Length: 274
Image 1 (cartoon, rainbow, N blue to C red):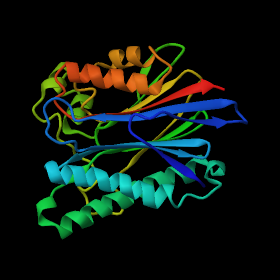
Image 2: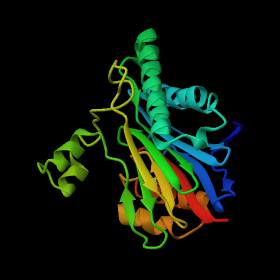
Image 3: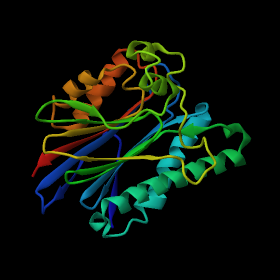
Image 4: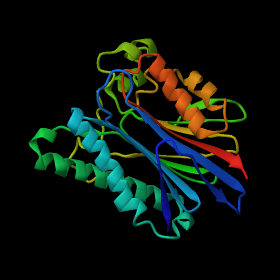
């Protein structure tokens, strides 16, 4: 299957002629206002009638974080995109889900192997939040605390699809702390699950599915975005435009205006009627 890599800030579209659905997407990233390097890596691919988006937020020091997130994107490129069969869109949901899980498990091993080869990269890791969209069907693969949201075009309601694999999120889910305490907790950025943490074949990649509707907006982002912008604000900005690059840039600009304490990356996909 032929594929196209979308450049940062570029907008691309695909059309499903059978369902008369158009997907329009754009990837963007910013170093933020505090960091001196960008440990995020973001990518959007066009795969025939489908789109594949990925946000990877590296950790483990400047060099290690950049390398880990780069390796995640590179592995998805080589082990999924470049080797994808022409009839992938005819495979059932379970088969596609397993392929997404497998490629992130492979990325986990690639990160571990690179760290073992280079002492200065010891302890590096990365989040990975990925979505494959075909017409109105979306399959997500996720590990870490980067996020995926869906904003409904009709109701303007926002839903966080993924769960953060962080210690603070676990404390919040168990009722030990409040949402207000979670926002300022000193361990809010400490993850218990990410690529590069476990030398195991199965890294507990989470799979989610969602049926989309015309007008919906899908947003993948690194944690630098929700650090500064509330969910209802993300929803408000997402429905303010039909252009994904405009939505993404407005989100990044607002996060930077409020301090930009971390790198900020987004992939925005809008579902339209052809």
